[in-house]
Length: 259
Ligand SMILES: O=C(O)CCC(=O)C(=O)O
Image (tube, rainbow, N blue to C red; front, side, top):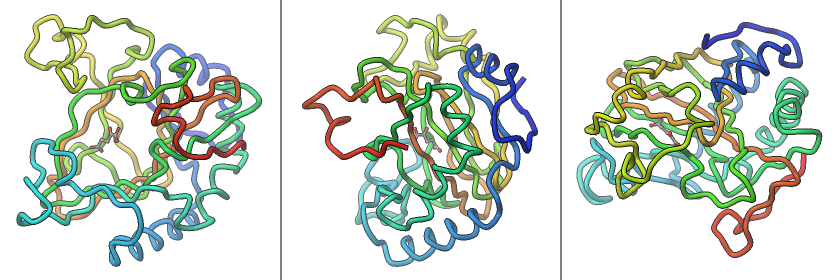
């Protein structure tokens, strides 16, 4: 089961169980529209000015992305990084009980937000956006353990047409052999051994204000945007206090926020 509609400030016991078995859960209409409007306003301001720390489609080299910053569409923004430095709305949002209570249920009483991972607004444009292959976010992160959770906030409709996330249920608790992934640690779609996993994928279609919680080991992917409008999503990562980043790694490069 992928979706759960709720207006409560916590997960039910069943929802927690679903998260632990599937590695993700969707909560519908969790974020008040005033937050969505403010985040979209900040996003339009900063994308319009190409302000701050930006990832361009051309930086990632994924299928569909422009080949270089100077190529046609080369300045298409893929995400505004460091959302927290862009506006106080983000720190206010992650402390809201409807988010924090749920994170505490999944991670324990003391929740920390690393500012180095995600902490962004993703902007998937109709032209020049790219396909993201099947991957686990944890693959290039370094913490004591891999029990981190992403919160994906839809700022508008997310559908198969505009490149919503797809997920493989249960993969957060599975073990994989190295050869099942390619050199960049994307799951190989050409490998018969991966067929059953690929066939198990579910689609996380969302509307503005819906939130997808997913485990950092849960395989997910998305296509480029085939619609006429840009898709926007705010994404943050959380860990428990007792799961710090490994010193000297990229995960330890920026300060974190104890919520
Ligand atoms: O929206 C997408 O293309 C996927 C983004 C994603 O999976 C990621 O940033 O980890």
